[in-house]
Image (cartoon, one colour):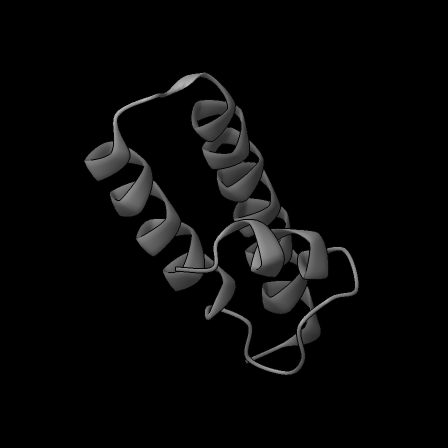
Length: 64
């Protein structure tokens, strides 16, 4: 995977997890929140090389 691909993946994941964070802030259904967190954890696993520093906030937010 090229560095350019890694940057594209990072931008995509960053957009996805930001949207999940927004949904978690307004959603009160426990099952929906559980599913959102699961998708968030999956998104954070898409990095090939290393997890960026900004992802730490989301790793905490998406914990089970």
